[in-house]
Image (tube, rainbow, N blue to C red; front, side, top):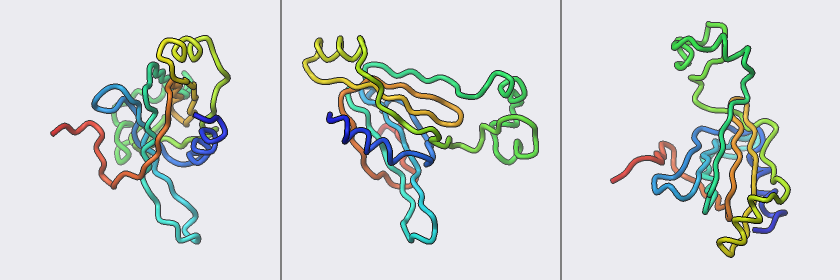
Length: 157
């Protein structure tokens, strides 16, 4: 995948909201669902976009919330926006994370070279920084598509 195209696709996530991330229900690809909005005066309709990181051989998720904030954010009432709104601590229950600092393509690494050689396709590494989690993915391709409101990635039929 061309780095310039990848950077452009990832740049469109900046300052939008991640509402879900995890492996797709078939466990090969990693998806990040972003709620994309614009200033209301633009008349651009908000949408839910699925960033599908195809052939994802590695996914690392780590907190971006400092330990001192975690320490005051253990109260179970903080996992619900209504019960956590007036409490001190991080309100986990907002059910979204701002993609702040954004997503960036990392330089080629030993891991990307190893996987590219082993599978015969090019691999990239991306780090997406949000206000509660940082996600680093090692994958081969990215597809972006709009999904309907209420899209449930783990529903099986």
